[in-house]
Length: 162
Image 1: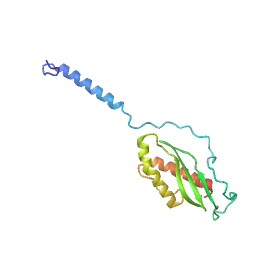
Image 2: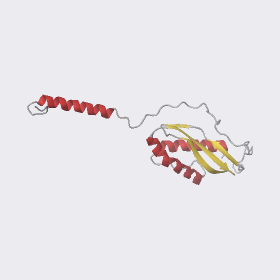
Image 3: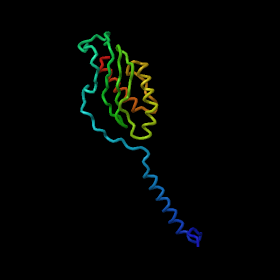
Image 4: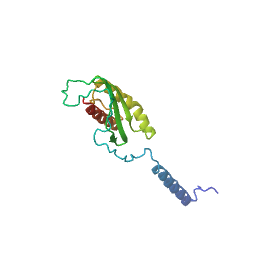
């Protein structure tokens, strides 16, 4: 005899309940996105992570916004902790203008982060080079990365005296 015959309704009910419970357990065990792990905050509370090359002029004392430093130098902004991971930006300056902006740290722990940041980081770089400041638009779908990028960029610009 077949297990699901109509003259055995109790077996059908038991089998349906067991199948439903198994399905619910399997659905609840799925983890589509790994939760953010608290990253240990770096001990650089100040501007210690802003190296510059030796050819920059020493005009750090009381410069009046109109003077620009000459030469090429690289400045790294502070690491900004976002919900999905740290973001840090390094800029290259030549004659007081931003010639390059590189995200040296950004969330890339899982495929979703990699997908989002593969289009967000280049777009943020283009915006930075066009605006020559940290006043840039956020990238839709990458709000946390955009906010962290802008904060780190502003930190680098502040360290550079711009």
